Amino acid sequence: MTDDQTVPANYAAGLFDLSGRVAVVTGGGSGLGAAIAIGYAQLGVTVIVAEINMAGAEATRATIAEQGGKAEVASLDVTKRDQCFAVAEAVKRDHGHIDILVNSAGSAFRSPAEEFPEDKFNFILDLNLKGTYFCCQAFGGVMLGQNKGSIINIASIGSFKAYPWASAYLASKGGVLQVTRALALEWRDRGVRVNGIGPTLMESPLTRAAGATSSITADFIKARMPRPRLGLPRELIGTAVFLASDASELVTGHVVMCDDGYLNA
Ligand SMILES: NC(=O)c1ccc[n+]([C@@H]2O[C@H](COP(=O)([O-])OP(=O)(O)OC[C@H]3O[C@@H](n4cnc5c(N)ncnc54)[C@H](O)[C@@H]3O)[C@@H](O)[C@H]2O)c1
Image 1 (cartoon, rainbow, N blue to C red):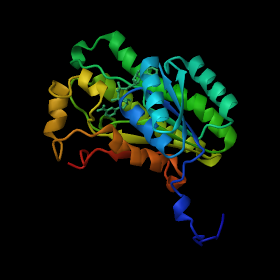
Image 2 (cartoon, helix red, strand yellow; image 1 turned 60 degrees about the vertical axis):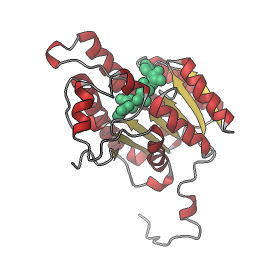
Image 3 (cartoon, helix red, strand yellow; image 1 turned 180 degrees about the vertical axis):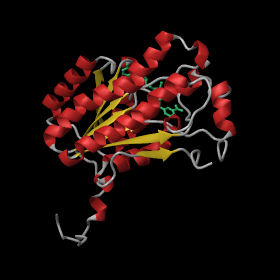
């Protein structure tokens, strides 16, 4: 226990400082992960774009390099636990520390529940839930060894609310919420914080592929939005910076909603 209740000079100025930190962003080759990766690099973070799609990863790396930032790509299928541990070991070896993990690799599949294909159900759960869990184990394990680190799992309004034709996705994102809470509890006293970001329906390649402009799922969500507008990937960067930084030292086990008021409606 400390009884130090002072606020040292310039304390607040350093709260959001991420310079010199190392971040691994899974799914950083597209959409939300790409925006967060680029945003971190703009603040002096060295970003490892960990992807199954190397063309996407390379595009994010090139954008970061053009903007004067530091980034590398790593080939990673997050559904393969041994690959997650191998990449974590490689990043630790090359950089000495891993400060931030963003789990953004994910996908969606639309189908009525009564005919949801088993292989698609397994695919979504393996990728969104197990992939997130394996990366938390592998990269979080390095963080536990350092006694410091911040993990940010991309959750969803679907972690809390139902919508049609997305039962596997909703199950996976409900699971991501509980994994976030479980690991936050187990790892708090070892310096590792685990939080999530809960975006509204966003403009991204994923939502375009899944029919965000018009579909049973998207129309249901859009009809319930306080203002009928999709989020932009860059609109998550501020929250991703907050959760990665010392500014959120007392925040763990929570999903910070970037939902434009959706859950409140
Ligand atoms: N787009 C939205 O409206 C929205 C809303 C809430 C939450 N999310 C979540 O945000 C995350 C990112 O979504 P997005 O819209 O940016 O999707 P996206 O399809 O644009 O990007 C996902 C990335 O994950 C990568 N990926 C897929 N499988 C992988 C694997 N096995 N290993 C490593 N990488 C893999 C893909 O190559 C792709 O680059 C997902 O978890 C998604 O569920 C998206």
